[in-house]
Length: 131
Image (cartoon, rainbow, N blue to C red; front, side, top):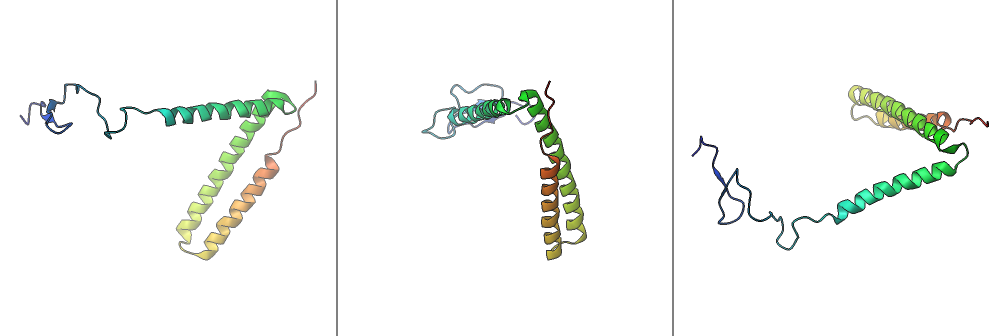
């Protein structure tokens, strides 16, 4: 039976089903739980949709309209990705050059603060055109 690929797989105590047959009943992980409980997953996706709706409604109320606000959001996201890449590169070099050093820890905090201030300065809203 080893070479045929038809070896039985034991799903439950006393039941023997080959790999190619479907089990007659759904497999339950716990005896007291229904086969599939999706309430938490539904809540998670409802929260994601709610976040998108709230963000769009808040951005559309701000001056300049939704389009300019979304441009600002995209610009800030690019800036955040660039600054976080800089932080990861610098912290990697510092960790490899000076492992287990308190001066390295202080330098990483200072670099993080400097990059945070850079984000606050460069991430401000641009002036919108009144037409």
